[in-house]
Length: 114
Length: 114
Image (cartoon, rainbow over all chains, first blue to last red; front, side, top):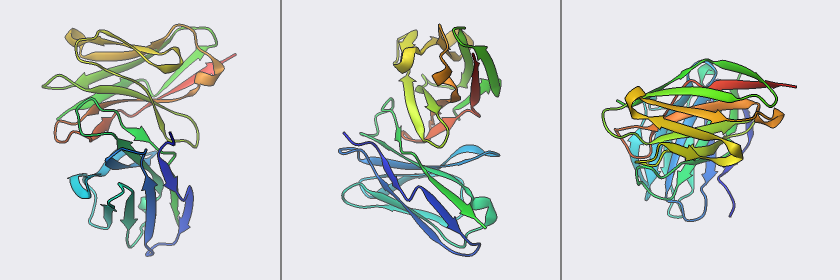
């Protein structure tokens, strides 16, 4: 079974631009979460989608948004990019929302903002 | 709110030596705990997850973790380190504010010398 697939793997953008990252979950997984990883802040939760609805949102500005499609694929969008948005963005999927259901992560999209 | 603390940002061992990576959790309810590993330029790979009632949890690649409620700990161990174990390890707990939100520790980088 294929794992979580994130595209693209690398992105270079300029301040003020916007960017869209894509995530395809493991087949059959309905929950998709996004995390930001930076050297300074570590791994931080962005948001979670389940059945095309945002279920949880982390403490990020409104420039960060996402959506989930009927096939469970998800996209996240960052508008008006800032230098501090440079990070590894990780997508994770899980089968359901049972408490001990583990999250399975993709290899991430590394975003560099110049 | 749930949280985890990883003691030691770096741990160095010799090949063949015992690996011990420490994680303490804070939780007002039975925790849902996980250990993940991250190799360079990759996402997070699930090593193991805590199952309610268990004290010793076995994971992949020879790793295991011992759950001690009295010490609120979930330390990760491996009897004999391999060079291929060099990576960053993250302890995580499911947030009590949402089923699929993970709160991560700051990570411990394991260095293995020949």
